[in-house]
Length: 460
Image 1 (cartoon, rainbow, N blue to C red):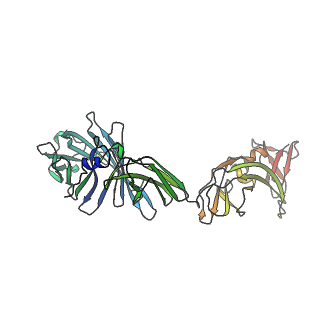
Image 2: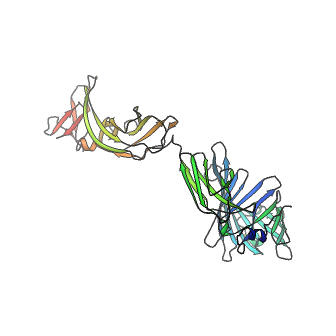
Image 3: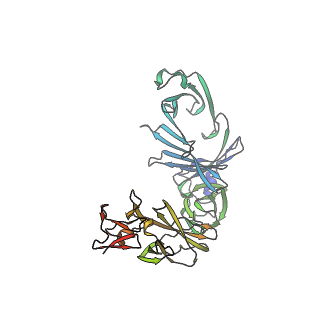
């Protein structure tokens, strides 16, 4: 059984006071041959536990009580940690945990929530608790703890009552007749937990001394494309540090580190190595790495909007109106090589976004031509009657692919150029009927109305 504690003498030899030090589990080895590594902040609070491809992240309230745990799995195909379980904790007036809420597979179709309620504590162990499931169905549990002469838990048998026997039970009259499992703990002569078995896996622990003075301060992360540079303040007299990120632990001499990482939000921490033992770690920092082939335009703006009438080859409609929307933008810093741009606008006529290509890779502006009918609201007879707020956005087509969407701008040129106007409706005879905004038929010769393109009526 492995159990190691760095001596006070060793700490004095390297010139660091250990009077406020606290012995904590820094590593564990389980019977499945996994190593568990534990990372503590300057307050000696565990904030990360990493084993295999799993990372657990812990948070605390101002009273130092554990408030949440997020369990994430490393997905090598995407190179990111993905949340697969979330837990939150509540406490009673005595500081004992009264409730634990577990959400497994959050946000997926397999999401399930369990709520454990704890009560009747003896020597810090809840002798009763229940697991709530399916709204009104309970698995009721009872813990039967055994303690040594120092009131330390050495064994606990967990009994339960089948939920088929009751619903909404009263705790006092439940018959706990079935054994669920049991767990044991082994204590060292110095009073620390040496090992434990949860009924399936045995864990053996390695300890180290922790203190706020061991935690590196001033950790910063700066990113340049896909390269991250870390810097931090030295722990006095110490030159060796572990840099921890993703699935990597790197031993570094000095107070800086530079590495290339995958895109996304990357979390880093740094841990001082004192006498060959890892100590308190710096507060983690996040570096957001953006693929330069995905960088969007963020300052898309609308300039002048005009309307023109252009000739067509159609004998029935020899001319057509167009809105001309001037768009302006600049590329983001650090972008990849550009092939072209796409402009997207919403067409009410077609009920979808229309894509328009801008093939000039050096362009910083473009005049978008839109038929007025595409940015109008239509009546029950199929006539456009007034303008709508029309969203426009752009993407950049880099050599590595299409970027994310730009910011969205909106236009409504229809009402500007067709104020007080309703579309006219053509008939087979070639005659035209004009309608006002109230939907009333008006005489074509009525003063102030002009038929344009055999299609629109404009009030002068």
